[in-house]
Image (cartoon, rainbow, N blue to C red; front, side, top):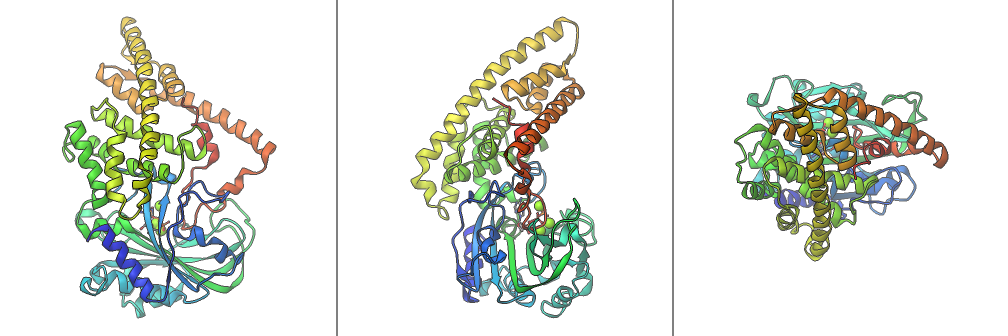
Length: 480
Ligand code: ATP
Ligand code: MG
Ligand code: MG
Ligand code: MG
């Protein structure tokens, strides 16, 4: 089943059940707590917080999301993208746990010839919050899940709040068992690769108070909310991966064409070499994220959103280089992304010239930096060899990183090509020294310009912190 069909089925399922279809918000919302929209609920936040009355009791959307916190997983796990589409259904004081479970179950396991996704019920598992007996009972009674496929988890995984006093509650996640070839038996609490999370149902039922400690769940529950809400998020690409019978999300219909293009320009084959495969997947993910971000108005820069974009684009160029491509590639990848994504996002066609020129300019600038950096590198390598050494000093690797934006793995790769190693330990010490200094700077700034810790407050609409925070961004924002 192609991605557009997965999206249509989701929307139709919930439209038929009385939900108002709401378009995706931009990746950039005017919300001081978030760099990027990272969940479907973000645009509905005022209704959940009670700041504005909800104009409809039920809504559904397919929301563009970006999670910078998942960047290191990309290409390595089977299921993490930086940009992905989250399909969601929302109830504002209307149906609650039973309705949410019923709606999700009927779509996930409904026969394909009746508008469902047709997953075998025997392969579905659910987790619930450790004390949420209601949810466990409903999975058993409404969905018919046997007790052994309903697992209980603690506050880290199955409890939700916005990081500030306000709504909170347990959540319940739905997993699909990919089978023994993907990992160990025993359900999602044992192996989240074999048991792939596809959907998270959040049950907002409590009012939480002020934080009392640094950990998730460190707050008193003040009582039940006057109105109980539902917020859910289903990963469109994860469903596509499972329904298309491919190994991972990067090989699904809307991303695979970028891998094909990267094969074409590099002359290497996806599937031949593990390290190359990770690079192919990184390119596929980052190219799409880059195009979607520029489409929503972000331009490359040294701070905040612009820096995230810059980092993504540089990782593409670097990955392509490690695949042996030294020519500009972003324009080619952008076209492929446009063709895959424009049926859902037609603005990618009308805005393409602008997107293309932003990407090309950034790539040109980075390639120029790379070429200057390469000269510095060659000189340092020659000096090392002349002195009879085989190891490039950590200070050189640091200079290449700090002044020329060379990521360490690029330096390592170039050194290896010349039969040299790199003093990584020395490099890392200089990096942490720099990070420590940047943190002190940030602290000084924080006292000067107000508390940046509010940036953490909404990070986590569904349980994990997705945003690496301004402090981290600033510490690494020295490239170029
Ligand atoms: P995971 O535990 O796999 O990292 P999560 O618990 O962080 O996922 P949620 O915050 O619950 O994810 O988001 C709701 C849904 O969005 C998930 O069930 C999943 O289907 C999808 N999703 C989350 N993160 C990603 C991602 N990085 N790439 C693709 N889909 C994602
Ligand atoms: Mg999870
Ligand atoms: Mg989850
Ligand atoms: Mg996550």
